Image 1: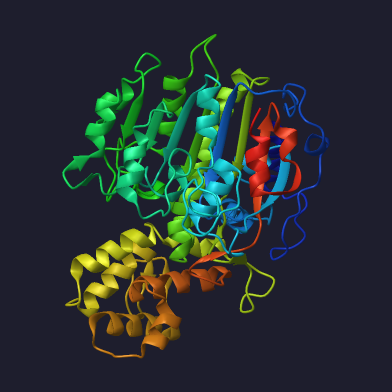
Image 2 (image 1 turned 120 degrees about the horizontal axis):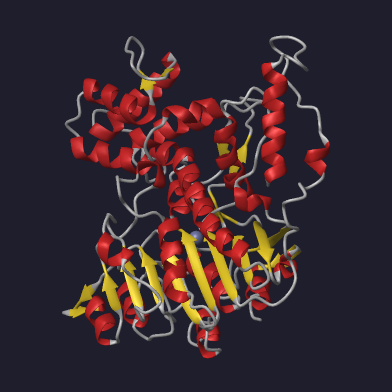
Length: 492
Ligand SMILES: [Zn+2]
């Protein structure tokens, strides 16, 4: 990666000295240097073969190739040329792609596609850890490694008993059996749980946290308690103290001192790793890439791809210390949103600068809209779209983007629909806003349209997902594969 940094500096030097500038409007094309094609002597060649003792399995929920590229585009917004430096994990030496279809559809949900990754079987929609008959238990990777004597970890930025993490420790006929999935956390095959809280923690007077404690787990739910965890802590659930509705905050709006997905990976290593001890298998999910993509919220997607990249960077640091014993793989369970970079309206151009004005996730904008409620005034609307999206309604200022009359009309319509001042048919409402907050959807649509981002769906799609790998055994993940092959290849 060092040579890329050098190339970047070199390009900057060219620009500063005016070399290569033909005219003001022409893009500056950096001249290739030997450093761009030859790794610097001090950078060791990446490891791709061997047998790993430490396995990191990262899942970006809903993360297609376009989501990964979008995260890199934002950093290009202020560059004078069109060069894109991929996020760090997208620079890993091994690249593949994986099919995500299920036993009963081409477009998967997270439970069934997660089961493909975790258990290596094609199952049917909404099923967690069972074969397509929804009865036969399909053993998962944490069970596989637990039986081999390894330590195991499951981390997620959404609820720890949500579909994707659930497939790595639970077996149940439907993902909505939240309490039952929570109960199965206490089975003891996972040594470290980290991240989001537990949906339906208590049901019929039974508490999952109490079950976990009875099974010998330490439940750490303050920053101090979590920071104090180490490899003498035994079985642990590090439950994020800042989570809202059991979901960790978006990385772009993280509260001061709050823990990030990367912190949970770091802590997972602290708990699972012992010098000369057994190896470990750790699954870490960045779960809100999917939530943001359902919302067609580009900035939310970027925030959570970057949260994943930062989390992977923790594993990469560990890999640098144990290069011949560590495997890192990054993939997705499916694509969400049908995201494309480039639209009919923007032609052969993208304008990532428009993403810079949005300062919170669409989800937080949604919370702000609901906090004001249906009695919202037009002045409150103007404040809201300026605060969250950087939008100036015509005649106002303080934001970074002044809306056109057409854009402002779209926001006003959404406002009238939301506040009940205008009635439109359910069909029109669904076409414009799906089932989401009309005001937030209108703003998300404007940001994406200006940037040149297309969304074909508010749901998942059936396009294959990228696979990135580095370290011992990484060569197994090159080329075209099926998601169940990822599972088979992860069994060493
Ligand atoms: Zn998913």
